[in-house]
Image (tube, rainbow, N blue to C red):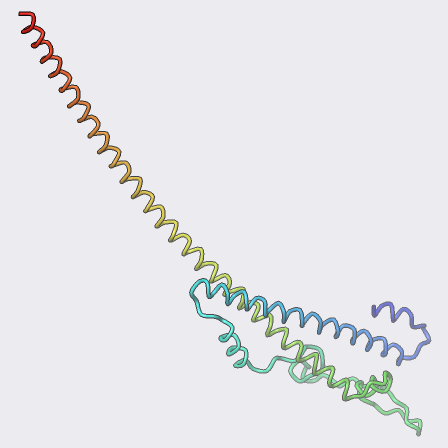
Length: 222
């Protein structure tokens, strides 16, 4: 979009028109940044709810309160790099200036912020407020990124605990199955022995009955 705006400016256009194009692009990008930040915030809320639900199912305490305490205990977010603040500007960096011509015709250095404000119609206070919002958004993004990392780590820990519990239950199940199988084998062996004993007793009873029948026949024949 910025390239299209710059291409639309003729070679003889003033610096103010180019600055206006740059500021319009900056406002457009800042809007996109705010939308992205809102989406990330919503995603964080969903992850926190999901993690609390998993922690509750696993018998673990909810993590939301701990994260809130951790976030409150953190220092102020760092400013966004490249915006000319003390934390990110080289010690000997000079303040950029833009030339201006007063009524007397002399040229005197004017801070670039004031030059941008004069060229675009945006006040210095508005530019400072936009810079502050960008720095705050950058700090929030860093904080949310760290919180996302914490959420992922807690999810991995919960998943490891769940896998350990599943493995433990499977091992116990295997032991129970083996015990039942062993008991079933012993029961089958016992029943088999009892059946063999009954068969032997039945065969002996048949032999006795045959012998008695033969004896009665001999006596009857006599």
